[in-house]
Length: 262
Image (cartoon, rainbow, N blue to C red; front, side):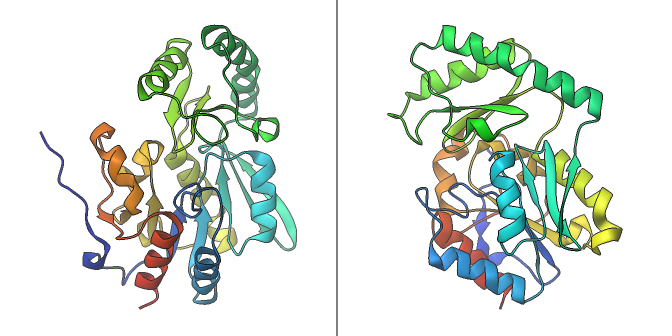
């Protein structure tokens, strides 16, 4: 059965939205850069009182920086493994997995990385791999010649056969152990910190994303928005965003901000 196509963002009722969760790569960024238009839009939302939480596959090292220096309330990193946020001038961190489960998950990563290298000669891990704690990111188009789609799919299946969860972003295949996703990461963060940070209800957040690894978020948020560059991925996806922007990437993020600020 064909899924209903996303509606244009202009048709969304955003009157009850108080917070925005959003992917970073190719949702907030554009071709690897954060434009002045997108970053200004983030500041405009912040000044208007919206709660802002990036939910990303990017690593712990990046998330430390994002939590400290961006105009956001928190960041969920490595596809839901942890959250970081500032409270009373200090960086705080919340782990999605318990201590024992997290340690066991991390212990399996090197074995998976070695197996990938043997199976895919010449493979390159993401340039930010050294800053990761819970996952392996395999670069298929960020800093390497783009892989054929069939090889990306073969890599995903290989990781899954090794017992890992594997998700395709716009630039990487991320693989990890431990039963969590972006949606579990954000739900647990909100449940843990809602009273401390005086956060809105989950139902008062919208989500913006651009790729198949955002599917759990598209499914969970009543107001889910894909930037225009999600369209080529739709034939591979089982869940679509409810709405779509006219513009791609950072310009699409700016479009979302304008719609919220009306």
